[in-house]
Length: 133
Image 1 (tube, rainbow, N blue to C red):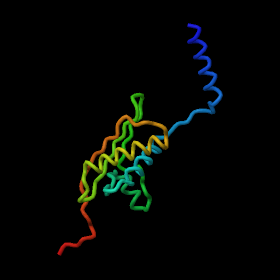
Image 2 (cartoon, rainbow, N blue to C red):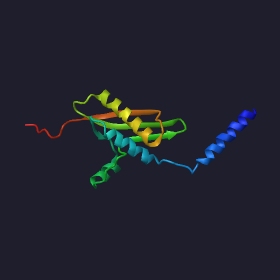
Image 3 (cartoon, rainbow, N blue to C red):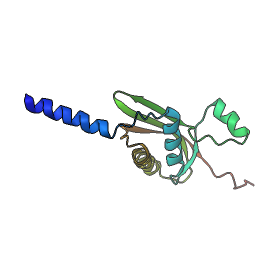
Image 4 (cartoon, helix red, strand yellow):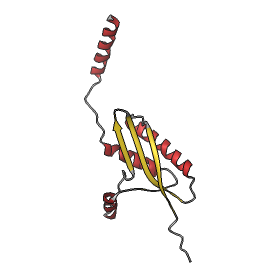
C-alpha cells in the first residue's frame, strides 16, 4: 500500500516538472493533416467536398480538409476519407495506401494513433485531356 502511494507521488511530481500547460488540437488541424496525406497518394484524383468548399475553391482558396470527417472522442480517433480515384488505378491498393499514409502522418505530427481510417471511394475520374472524336 505504501509503495502505491510513493509511486503515485513520484509520478505526479515527475509529471509536474515537465508540465508546461495543456495542448489542444482543433479538428480542422487534423482534417488538414489527413487531407494532405490523402492527396499525396498516387491514384487519388479528387476529394469529395461540400457546397462551401466548392465556393471557396471557385475563389481560388485551397481547401485541404475537403472530403475528411473526423470523430475524436473518448473511444479514440476515427477518420473517414471520401475521395475518387483515377481511371486505371487499383482501388484496393490506393485505399490501403491512403490508410497507411494517413495513419503515419497523423501519428508523426500529433502522436495520436487513429483507431480507424475508413476510406470511401465515391467515384472514378476519367482523364479529361483526351478528346473524343
